[in-house]
Length: 128
Image (cartoon, rainbow, N blue to C red; front, top):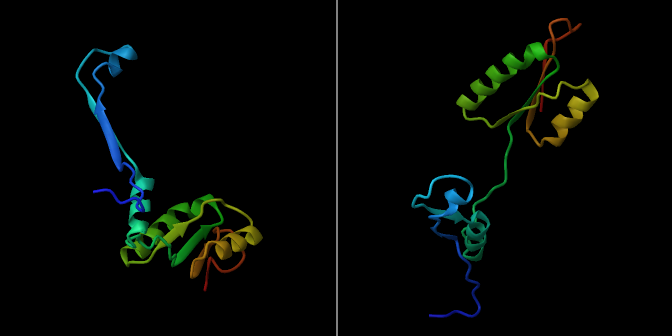
């Protein structure tokens, strides 16, 4: 049956590639292969109103200011993820102004900034 108003595209394709390996210096052995079209799958899902919601909700962004805080950041991220939170760690090790800008641009609901041990003040800062 043909539906002219519908677009039909291959989702995957493949075949036999018996001489492919020998073309590149390998043995002549029987071979098969296929390729899968992820873009086509998304197109088909959208066409049928079944497209998944791929928007990302980020609960926390964690920014260490010193390489000595990377381990702490990873532990915190793991603990928060275990509790069901979505977490992003940014290891760019930047200055305060850039870190605050990155935290704002991340779209995270909360930011956790980790300061080095020689910092003259609070060791961490939590913001929403």
